[in-house]
Image (tube, rainbow, N blue to C red):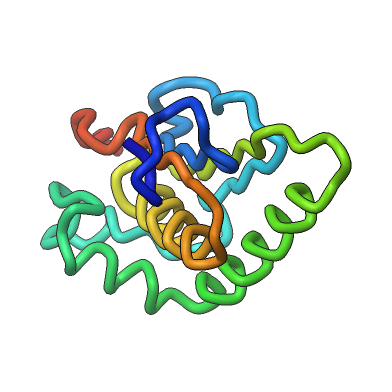
Length: 135
């Protein structure tokens, strides 16, 4: 079930978080690669085994410099796609290394922002429950 109470398949936007370490990104109009430009919570042993389901992870990612402006800019980008003449579903793929921390948190908050703007959003965390990638 997506945000807005609609069944999957009738969404305006599909936001998928993923880990590049678990495979190729899903096909999408918008792809965010968070690997190089944003601090990785994985380096903190306290956060390493946690996921987006844990408040400490969400808080750490949201406090990362640049994340909030990225969310604002991506929201505007998705809305621009929605304003286009096609009326097709907009797909967004948000990736980091493992798909548990940065990408899942950004996808979570992006979906919330879009839902608050009246869009039906399906949120998928492709790799959030996969094992931690050892590096």
